[in-house]
Image (cartoon, rainbow, N blue to C red):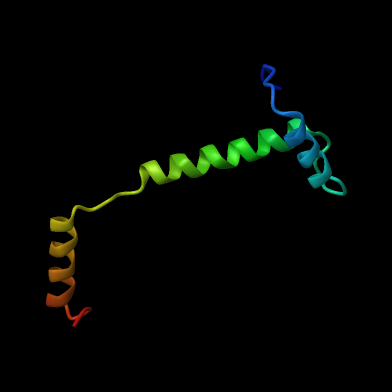
Length: 72
């Protein structure tokens, strides 16, 4: 297990999470929060690695697809 550090959250959020995880596989609020944060970070990292085309690049791709008969 990795080293842990304490983070404080508002009590009302803690209580909402506590209610949300009842009858789930999560054993604690901390476990749930860790899971959610990992999912968010993975999603953000995925977005950062996606290629984004400039308008000029996108137009070149569209022109090529038209030339190949894929677009009208």
